[in-house]
Amino acid sequence: MHIHHTIAALRDGLAGARRIVLVPTMGNLHDGHIALMKQAREHGDTVVVTIFVNRLQFRPGEDFENYPRTLAADCERLAAARVDHLFAPDETEMYPAPQQYYVDPPTDLIGILEGEFRPGHFRGVATVVLKLFNIVLPQVALFGKKDYQQMLVLSNMVRDLAFPVEIVAADTVRAADGLALSSRNGYLTPGERAEAPRLHEALSRIVAAIRAGDSDFGALEQAAVAELRDHGWAPNYLSVRRKTDLQLPSAGEADLVVLAAALLGRTRLIDNLEV
Ligand code: PAF
Image (tube, rainbow, N blue to C red; front, side, top):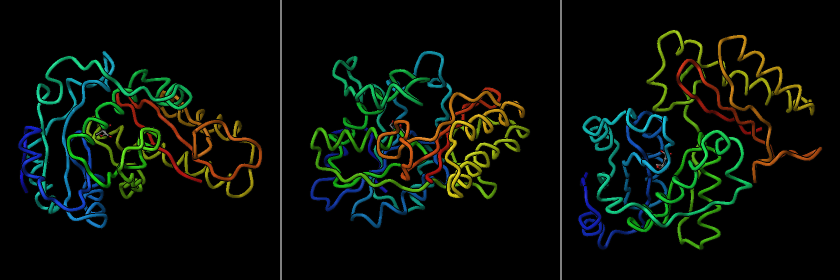
């Protein structure tokens, strides 16, 4: 695996590369990321991974400073997964001057759910991802469905800005007990880790109820929120939404996704399930 820390070195390394598949990450790689790398190989010839903890998508008081940075261990996992190139820039390489140009996704999509609780987050994500696209010039890019709203923001961005990249949405990878894999799971205490699968269980029950014909989404959401609260969670949102734009569904709509974010102790977990 070739490791590059500068844009110039990466571009040199990619000169002449055929069908480039990009997997952008913030590092601290887990099995969910590695599944993405393996899937990436099926979509092209040259797999490029980026590791960059992007300050622009964190709000003051969030975990930017403490976000786990584990480059040496990540490199070993990437090499074992037969990734071709790793781009791991430092902050001055990505932001040599304060960033003044931003991608501004539409409020309809980023003012809700995650965006309501993390204002500015998707603006930061869209900006860094567009910048990574310009640096790597991939034909394909993979994003996990665990960050469902992020995946939609980015798919709509490439469509609206006619960026010539195909976005592939990869299924969420889960632990045996259902917990969606996430770098932030590492923040959980052993007791919280034992409790954490309840979020996925709550979403699964809602999906099962909707599939069985229950259309009282409000009641299903309230019951799930109450259950989480009873077990010490502080839910931010738990909501049945239309898959295509994450707005509230009209009666009879079938293309749905249930999304949730909740704090367990000091750790904020997000998850979703398509119906
Ligand atoms: O999902 C992530 O890890 C980040 O939001 C991304 C897409 C790498 C942008 O920093």
